[in-house]
Image (tube, rainbow, N blue to C red; front, side, top):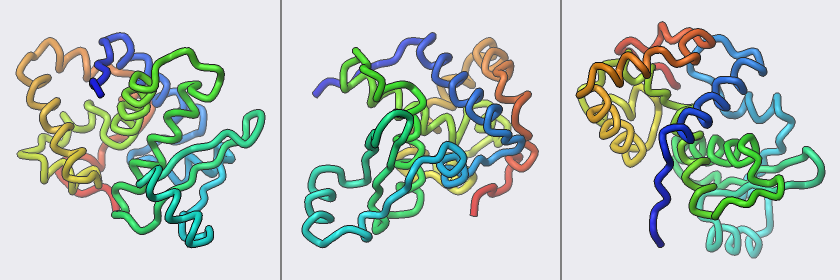
Length: 196
């Protein structure tokens, strides 16, 4: 299956959706906890370990990390595999919140690949917004992994993007003008581990 590539304005719209979500829910400092976001949005979080072994085996086979479900008008649940690494669990929760916040359950006419790409960017930006990555001045993907509590695979992608954007000072200036810097306090990001 071919990977869907988002366009510049699509990235901006997703990042603004994340920023507005944090602002609307009253978050003022970074990092923002996915569990608290789900709670404030009244999203039910359900562990795979809470279902029968037969159902769990089916879930893991079909949705290894997790999946979201619309339970009715404005009611959602996120089911997640609680036997995977905590950084993958958090990414899964953010990813599924992204599907909800980006309207993918609302009779969306986008392709599956586009919705996955959008939810993926939502999850990455919620955990490691590029302005915060730039402030942290990472040396490598391991730095990003420990600073933002990301899986190494995700941190490698973030570090690759960081290297590309910091090559151009005009892009860095544009990124550092993002509204998220006015919404959240990133003072904890400067070269120290911020997540537990």
